[in-house]
Image (tube, rainbow, N blue to C red; front, side):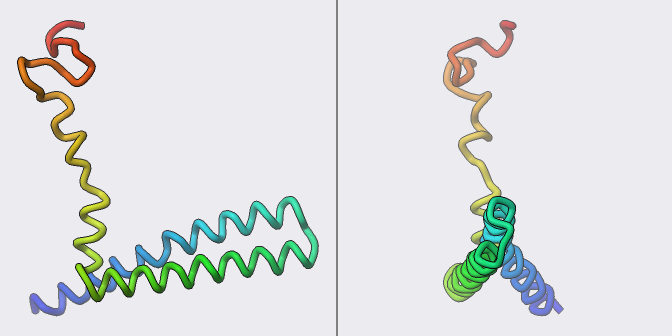
Length: 102
């Protein structure tokens, strides 16, 4: 049962990684088609969308085979530099002000 859950989460992570460059490509494609609403704009837009999809497939498959998609996504989502923003030496924040002074 544990292995099935792990496979399902890896597949969901793989889909999320594929969607990122795909949606970016679609966004660029819509922008191009907005400024060039003709057949050439449509062809260029579709080409950019397909390139984004292919890049997403390659990237997701590479991460799936190496570190795992969930590990990769958790490293992207985690922001360790923001965790310690309020806690520095001498009770001061990164901006140099005391936490208690407003």
